[in-house]
Amino acid sequence: MAGCRQVTFDMDWGKIPVYLIHRDMTPMTETLTGNFGKYAKRYAEYERNDRLGQQAKLFDNWYVLKGSHLWDPGYLGKYDPTGYLKNTAKILAKPLNPLIRFYLLKAGQELKPHVDFKTKCCINFVYQRKFSGITVEGVTYPYGRFLLDNTKMHGVPPCTIDRFIVSFSFGERYEIVEEILRKNGILKRSSTTV
Image (cartoon, rainbow, N blue to C red):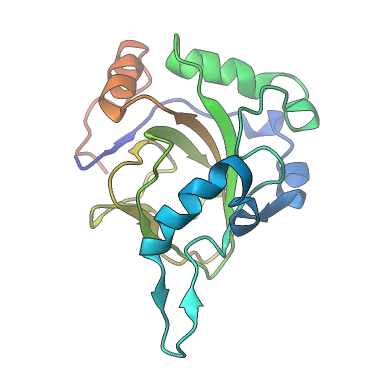
């Protein structure tokens, strides 16, 4: 379908220090500097004025792990104490080497529709059992674990509870990663089943 496929891999959340990661999250707007600052201007096109005439920032309510969003967090340290996440990255998309990122959308908030400029696709795992699905080009997918084409317009409607995800992000195109996941037995067979 429209750039979103369910994956079959089950994340072992007991091996991830979710509380510690959650505690160390920071608004993404604070990361739109330095090397990533060049993308901040491109994201400005998604901003709009709200009914009070104030500019609505796309990433004001989108949180990332402080210090690890803008570069390869090759050393996750206390956030991956057993190496589970690095090993999972190798299993999911061998021979590719995805970046491991963490994102948080707080309860009552939404992630406005946008496309990503650096990340071409990602495999996301939602921690919560109840969550808002992801919308890709107007179609909502209720998946808690999925491959996403980040070059297509996507967003998340308002959540009733916090929505925390672990993301394995790729610079390779969606079709390339999709084929590798298919070969690795990670994709759900039918992309139309929801």
